[in-house]
Amino acid sequence: MNFAENPDFRLTVMTLNLRFGRADDGPDRWENRKERYVSFFQEYRPDIIGMQEVNDFQAEFLTQILEGYDFIGQMIPSPPYWQDNLIFFKKEWSCSWFERFFFSHTPAIPSRFQESKWPRQCVIGMFRKEEKSVVCVNTHFDFLSSVQERCAKMIVQKLSAYISPQVPVIITGDFNALPDSPGYREFVTHGRMKEVFSGEYSGTYHGFTGKKNDRHIDWILYRGPVELLSRKMIVDPYQGGYLSDHFPVIAEFRTGEN
Image 1 (cartoon, rainbow, N blue to C red):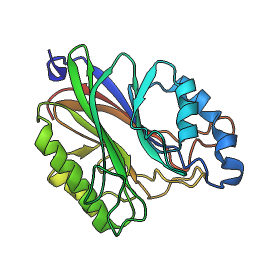
Image 2: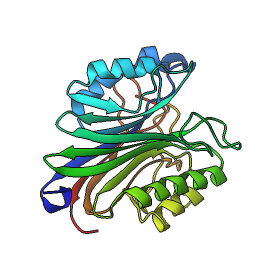
Image 3: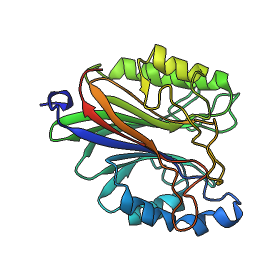
């Protein structure tokens, strides 16, 4: 039996930019806000969490508070100031394989396109539960729209080459771009992806203010035999402050025809 054959199977997925833990954020610096995640993950327990901007000490803290989860994507040892894209997943799931690649002409090694400010990367994993499968992708794009489009093409090409259309695919990430950007159009047009807030966007980046704006840059995209049941941008403060300068986004899926 595979994922598509169980019409009652449900899967919750979250995308969460942690905010670089070494940033000088004053009262919102990592040491002041990390305990907020304890309360947050007592309330929210998604099956899959795509996290961006994760320093090694942040990953260590999260592994301590996320009991019942495993994760993939960490570079060990990590260079100074290194930021990982991690995928946390409940231990009732298993990861049968995963791959990390960099957005560059040499994707197998830490590197970047010349126009990129940082060496951006992507993590892809195949997850299984009771003989059901789903592919999850987590990434963080750089700033130029032309580079974002190239990065989206790399992901779409990899998925087209290796992943059957019958296997659900879910992409999480901070894309540093708005819907209808070139990268977004690449996912929708050539990747046949949908975004969970399609047509009803509000800002996910708020800079620790908690104020909504038009900067909808954190997406959950999906394709294949899955049906979107619900989606939510989590705007609540925890323990007197915000988790990050981005609002988390969570979505629930069920198998079904798109």
